[in-house]
Length: 542
Image (cartoon, rainbow, N blue to C red):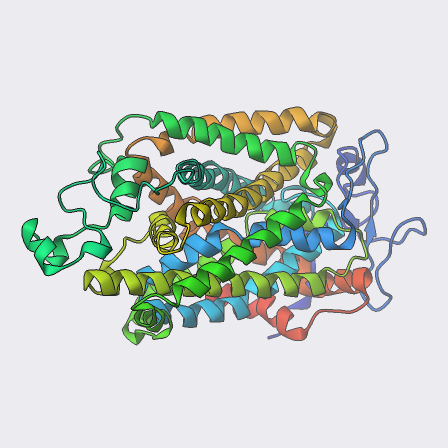
């Protein structure tokens, strides 16, 4: 669809990137930003001859160097995998499938990947690499929409506050796994009720002795989660007290994150290689055990069999789209920050496709592990799969521990499994904290870049304090509210829509293609351009 050329050029001139060397270089350049300009300078990088000319103002010489990935060309891949392959794959994706009819969720999910996820991921990384700056300063390309950059930092800041609570839960389970018998394996503990019933004892005689029916029973795994870990209250109106154990574990989680990012994620070395690869070993083992359990086939069928009536529910489509955006880090500045540490001519296009495929593949594989266990739990309790476990973050702390107790040497497997969850959680967390710190530091480089370590420490302290209400006895209700509204749902969709407006429409998809060609030698597939300009905004508005 053609656009009125004069109107569009005037819009770009008025609201888009600076139009000549004297427009914006002095003021913004003194702040250390890298700003594309529309003039030619022999001492600056220039775009291809058939594209609109671009130059890049260099950073102020009196600022500390920003740096690039210390692990070479693989640093970006593993950095992205640390974010994209995390608890969002093994926790959030399976519970969204569970909540939205199993296989019915996969159709909108795959459509969202094709039309939004991969194209927007490439667009964000390309802009980050081209500008070599964080999620706020990149909006010097389109100054009138710079508020979108601040909105992204707000979302990722809120995400940092509540996401790390999952790491505190994981540490709780990990510490309590160093026992000869796992505390969630048997009934008879102080937190168990008379309805607690072990799968191995699920016989009619035992049920009759307790005056229970099969539908009345609760597994020891669920009671451990609700009555001991959370000590869950009756509702949001009753916040209860702080869980002292979880306060110390939340502090420990933040210490672990700070130890990785205090110098900057790009300087963290090969630790990001280990944190990206280690979880796959245990996922494969857990999958092998999960599919061997009785009733696993029912769970897998529920996972892949679509309930087409669910597709008429708009919320299914909204949640599928937001899950893709959330797991790919789109709209929150993470991809821009990670891409900004690439060298100018790094082939991010290839790496972005690899990361997207691995991230989505991990989500699907984790769903197989989860649903094989849910099928077993439903078989043992003789319930429908939809009734076996609650949706929400607790699904990972219900289904996975259920697998562990079935393995020989259960405590050893529990330690390894929760160590895996710890790695998955912390690597995603230090990527999002890094994106937040990078975005703020690059916006105020003269003040914050020389004091980056101190600023990072202050960010960690403030976000730890803001997270304390989430580990109260009623904190799970606050957690669910933040998960639904702070960095997902309509909030995330709105930010991503206006990001597309700013970058693909005002700055221009043609100019993005030219920038990409100048960096890596070829332009992106026209399908990606179609998605930037038409498909992605249409899908998001729907």
